[in-house]
Image (tube, rainbow, N blue to C red; front, side, top):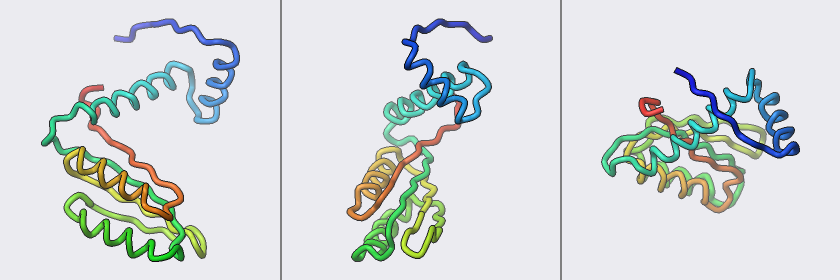
Length: 138
């Protein structure tokens, strides 16, 4: 059953929101708002997860492989967390930059710690940890 709600937005914010949902290909505002709410609920689910609950996430990092000893540091970090890493994909973006995608499974606190360590490693240009969910609670 769907329930209707109303929200108030100033004109400028609504215009920016409409541009955003058009860029992302949403058919309507409701679909976009539902996805935003789900994203926040997933974050909440992770924060409130039982300490021993097994979670799944994706870590994405971009780095310059010629950066001083960075490839070695990242490989070392990943080997130290081999129990959390299900799979990795390494893509050569160009002659200097690499993209790595890591599929992770384990306790949320361990996955978050690894994600933070990877993304904060000096020389990583971009990094993000994307928590996943089965959606049972959404």
